[in-house]
Amino acid sequence: MEPSRDTILERIRLAGVVGAGGGGFPAHAKLASRAEVVIANGAECEPLSRVDQQRMRDEPRRLLRGLRLAMKAVGASQGIVALKAKYNDAIAALEECLKQEKSADVRLHRLADFYPAGDEFVLVRETLGRVIPEFGLPLAVGAVVQNVSTLIDIAAAVDERRPVTHRFVTVTGAVARPATFEVPLGTPLSLLLRAAGGADTPQPALIAGGPMMGALAAGPETPVTKTLNTLLVLPESHPVVQRRRRAIARQVQLTRSACLKCMMCTEVCPRNLLGHRLYPDRLMRSLAASVAEDLAAYRGAYLCSECGLCAVYGCVMNLDPAAVHRDLKARLSKAGVPRPEPLPAPERVFGPLRAVPSKRLIARLGLTPYDRPAPIRVFSEPIASLMLLLKQHAGAPAAPRVKPGQRIPAGALLAEPPEGKLGAAVHCGVAGTVVEVTDAHVRVEVG
Image 1 (cartoon, helix red, strand yellow):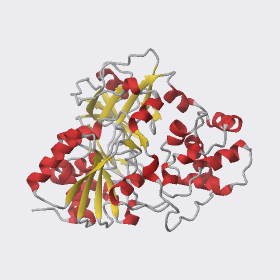
Image 2 (cartoon, rainbow, N blue to C red; image 1 turned 180 degrees about the horizontal axis):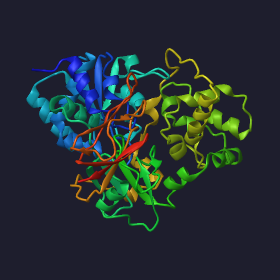
Image 3 (tube, rainbow, N blue to C red; image 1 turned 45 degrees about the horizontal axis):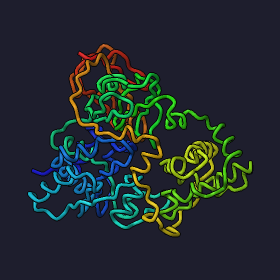
Image 4 (cartoon, helix red, strand yellow; image 1 turned 90 degrees about the vertical axis):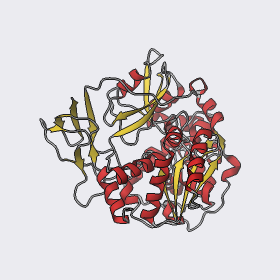
C-alpha cells in the first residue's frame, strides 16, 4: 500500500534527509508546503562535479520514485527532471524508465550547458518560464525544487526506512585518479584524497565544493557532510585558491585602486539578468569612491547568490564583488539593516542572451587540464574514526542522543533537532563506539 502524505513526511524527517545540492534545507520542511510542480535539479552546474549525472544514470528508478513521493507530499500534478542535454547516459536511462512506466506525470527538460543552470532561480525560469520574485522561493511561482540526490535519499527513506548515512563525493583536480566515491558521513577528506591516488602537486589546497562556490577546507581532517558533493584539489598557487585566500580588507583596497567602473560585473550577474535589483557595479563604485551614501546598492547585496560569475567571468581587473557582497551581507545583518522591499514583478528579463558556457568558464578558471571524467569507484580505504558534525543542514544544530562509551550499530541515530526547531537528524553509517560528544560533533571509533 502506498504511504500517505503524513507518512512520507515523517519518514523523511526521521531519516534526516536534507537538500544535497548545497543548501542543506531539511526536506521534510520543504515538502510540507503545497505546489503545482516538483523539479528534480540534475543540472550539476558547478564545474568538474560528476556526482548527480552518474547517479541519474545508475539509479533512474529510485530518482523517479523519490520525485513522485515528493509530488505526492506537495500535491503536485507534474514532475520535471531538469538535466543538461549533454548527459546522454542519464537521459537514456531515464527515458527508458519513463517509457516502461507509460506515465505522463513526469517529463525531462534538457538544459543548455551553462553556468549557473542549477541555481534554482535560473532553473525555474528555464523549465517553467516563471521568474521567482526577489527574496522569494520557488513556491512563489508554484514550484518546489529538490536536488536529484535528495530525491534518491527520499525514496530510500520512505520505501526502505533508511537514514542518510553516506554521501557520494567527486574527488578531482590535481589528483592521480579522479573518481567519485560513496563514503560514510564524517569520513576525513584525507582518506578521499588517498583513495584518488593522492595529490600530484607538492602543496595541495583542498576546496570543499566546486571552484565557483566551494570554500577552502579547514584541513585534511575536515569531515564529509550531507551537503558536500566535490573535493577539489589544486596547487596552492592556483588563482582559484588565491582568490579565496585574499582578505576582505585587501578586496576593498584593490577595489578602490583598480575598479574601472565598466559594469561588466552587473552585465553577467544572473540575478540582475532575471530582473532583480542587484547591481554589483554600484557597490564597487561606492567602495572605489570611499563613500557610503549609496545605501540602496549596499542593501542590494542581500540579493546576491554568491555564484561568483562577477569575479571570475565579469571583472577584467580580478576584483571580487561576490566576496564583498558576502562580507557586506554579514555586516548589514549584524547591524540590523533590513532587506529592501521586494518588487512584485521583475523589471526585465535578459537571462538567455548572456548565459556563460561551462567550457568557457572552466577555461577562464584555469581548470581545463582538470576537466576529466571522475567515474564511480569503490571506496576501500580503512576508516579509523568518523567525526559527524551536528550541523550539516539549515536550522538549529542537532542535539546529541548518545554518550561516550556507547556501542552503536550501523545506521544508529546520533542526534536530532531540538523540540520545535527546524533541523535534521544525524545518523552514523557504520558500527562502532562513541568516543567523543560535544555541542558541535560526535566522534565514533569504527569497529
